Image (tube, rainbow, N blue to C red; front, side, top):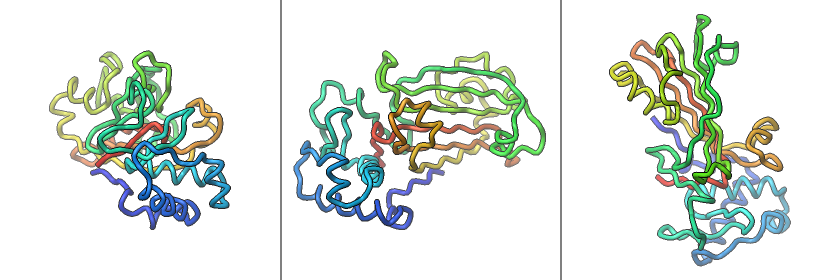
Length: 246
């Protein structure tokens, strides 16, 4: 189950950036693919709102595949068949089909086995005090791991998947479980949600952002046939680096 809010932004967005979003939609309709929009500062001034409000509206345009943001160059009207001129589109934007996961280069940051703390027990809906395997990975736009696109944290109940840290942790969680735990993983029910928000101070620091910015957050919960949550995965992508297509 995937929950994507693309078709219902008007109900979920705050009035300020909803109005900016609608105004930019109308403006884009009269522009050509590859044409650049005004800067965030200029748009904020013309709409009489804060740059953060404009940034949130621009992020939604990008998620809907209507614009492409290129760091250092600006925001461009998207061509569905061809992105604005650049040597390597993947170096600035990770394309994501909602049925899959974003196309990024993943690097394992850390992996540890530890007793779940209160927040992790709550996330796993655990009434006991389980040990959890905590896997942290970073997503990059380039194969040299220079341009960070997002961060990922995976929590897995160690008693349900013993020895998980001894396997290759470079693949995404569904692939990891499927490859190494066969039938047990095939019986799991996955629930995935997608939403956008502004980064917290800690997230801004961990993502090396100069200031709080828009994030695309993907949360996945895996439950066994008895309804027990056995794994949770949260991935936070810098909004301007992800183009969402359905």
